[in-house]
Length: 323
Image: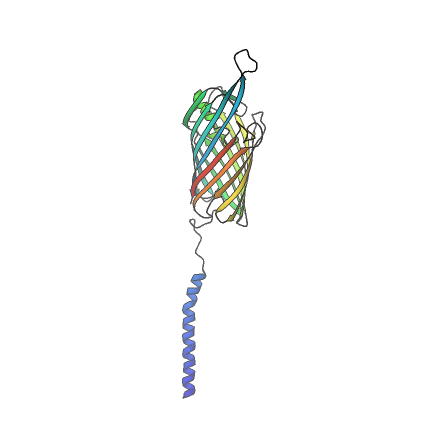
């Protein structure tokens, strides 16, 4: 009798244990199962993918002094004339994912330019000179385009697209052109379609984005720009843009990096314009707000060296969000 009771006790214990294990197994499996990756939770380390909106702010301020011979007969008397340039551009930039890897791109520049004294700027083969004082706020050329972006490998993304500008000022006045020219070299001859008045620009751009170990990010891109004049006295302009960026993110979203770029104006005597931009950035991996602050410095003639008087050194800031 005691043996039977012992056997029944053992069977009851085993049954209870089996019931507890069978009840816990689905719960454990549910805990281990990862939530599905949706479009809202997908990691977007490639900047050319997904939705983005930002304001890009460029501030160029430069001045230099020029010594001129005085009007009187004294050869030792000179007149010191100061010339200055201030260009401020705030560009709203949007990127919207239509479907798959196809994205819609749009830009709208809001520009202020102020110059005083003697100014001479190479507009890709057309030397633009002015004297006196001019200041003006105006809308730059809106841009609309499409690009495709996708991953060849988990850590290798490629992109390519085309865009065109809408010339809001096909017959710009001389004062308006002076204010626009104040901003023309701000990005060391990159993205000149935003402020190149009296022209309709067409652009094509391709490139790659690479991520190494989730801490090192590399970007390479090549763009071509053809600008057709909308006025009889204008000239067709063609430029190649090649940019390279390296960014190190050792502390999660925070990064520091360097951009090296070269512009090749095919219609200008200045065959190449080099520039460098050290920058700091903050960008989340999935969605949220991002920030970038940099200083673009022209390295060679005729816009550089950027820290010299009258040359190009531009403060660049980007504030935006991605989703």
